[in-house]
Length: 283
Ligand code: C2E
Ligand code: CA
Ligand code: CA
Ligand code: CA
Image (cartoon, rainbow, N blue to C red; front, side, top):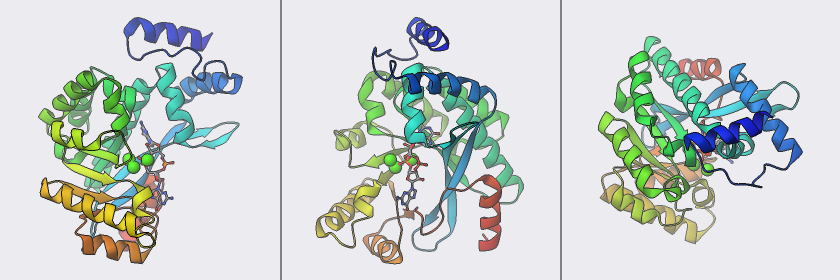
């Protein structure tokens, strides 16, 4: 009943396009979607943080917020499982708002602890089609007294593909606020280069699939080096994700990559552990 109510509501408000049959008949997914709505209300979603560090100096520049769902029966459910579910049930809009609020509150907490760090939040397909997104972001920046340039929104290319016109409008509103935009998973999407041409982007994030093979595959190394050069020539900050060993970090630094992120530096961890890690590093 919950789901029927939700899909009816989303259809009415036009938050999302209801796709019949897409996961909606699988009983486990149906009950999980109902659980997700309750779970959001019961604060079962938490954010883990993974540092983004300067490729040359190792200085911590900020962190990416990655959502986790602690389900009362099924335990920790990864975002790869419930984000698509949230998108198909209209829950992505409230979910994105929860994530934004929590990440900006954390950014404020870091500032109060003396760390000037930026925070990055992922906004996926339907999240970017929320006409009120920029207003919601502005309200939360004000609420937590966080300067707009310290918030990065990581968008994936699929998000922009869904409804390019509307997505572009939202992206431009965010840009006008002074929020930084990052193209996530760069190189994996449909027409990445067109987005660089048309969107007011600050950052380009090279997908892990290229980064993780760059020290063993000549092709991947060429792709990474060329992408770094492209990004830098466009005046963008280039980030490599999925850095798992020293050799990869060194190769990225040599290629001129600005920022690195990956298990080598830290896995995504809960806020308390992140603060302890920062303190331990003396940053
Ligand atoms: P993403 O934005 O590309 O995030 C990077 C993923 O790679 C994260 O998985 C992270 O834990 C993982 N990762 C980081 N460093 C390494 C590494 O060195 N090696 C390997 N093998 N993996 C690494 P996670 O946390 O499971 O998130 C998966 C995806 O879920 C994210 O991909 C993002 O697209 C989505 N997601 C996460 N949080 C949110 C959110 O709050 N909102 C939305 N809309 N999507 C989210
Ligand atoms: Ca991301
Ligand atoms: Ca990514
Ligand atoms: Ca990804």
